[in-house]
Image (tube, rainbow over all chains, first blue to last red; front, side, top):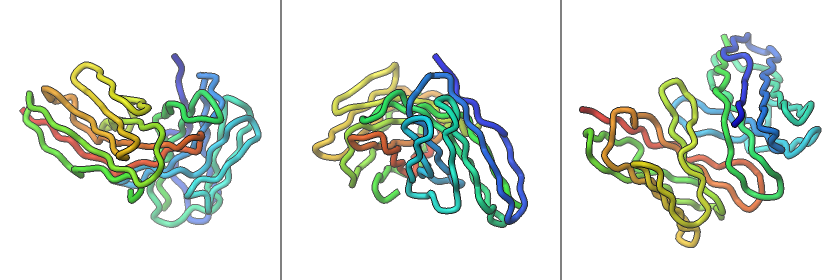
Length: 114
Length: 109
């Protein structure tokens, strides 16, 4: 088994601020993902990465940067936080590349922008 | 939510009864995952499906890629089955999951 850790658990920011969220996995999975969930909605893909230093845009990449520093970690940066924004950011990982594999999710980071 | 449509959007079940949730896909899905999101927000993996069926305890799921739909059956509903159920689909390559909007299930005594 393995685990996905997301830090911080709660993030409060100011309008215009640059904010960074971190994700670590010890599954030794190749592919990692960042999703955003708005209240009462499904998840939407922001970025994913199939290997270290790789980056692929999802449907919601505008306003975000991401970095896959090493196989086990994937960070997401909100480049300029929007006032009154509230969302949960969920990190996931899956074992392989070049195909579809089961994804496992972390517990999420809850963002509130004042 | 348009590419993956879940129905119903909400469901109220008496303990001990059975029910079915459905997802229809307008994308070329090759695999489907079903999750339960608990009140704390954690996503619990229920099923990972290629075309076919799987069963786990009181839950059973099916995925028909030709007809582009998947179902999740809950048998003998229990209070701990309450939460929001999401289906999500992926195509041939690891490009991320496309999620439905979820079905909120409430089980009452």
